[in-house]
Image (tube, rainbow, N blue to C red; front, side):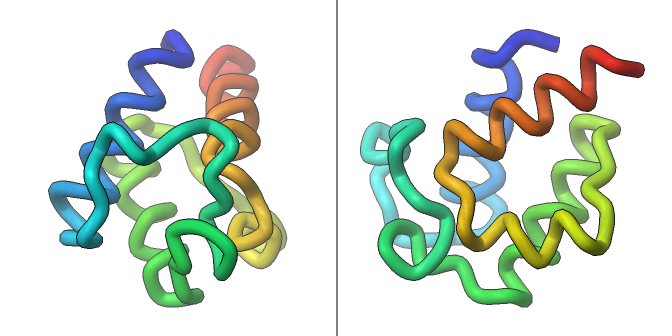
Length: 87
């Protein structure tokens, strides 16, 4: 699974399925998922993780979910790509 494929899926999850009012073009790798960027709360992080597992087949552990709010989009992509390629 390529980084570009994962990025496009994440952008679609955030802007399409989660209905966050953000322009897809504004979602860059440096954008934080948490308070200083997309402002995803803990429920939204869990929803995103569930969508990632369902659509991409990559599971985030419970301990990782606690950290994801502090990730940037790029850090999430790196984590997901490494996990997808390890399978």
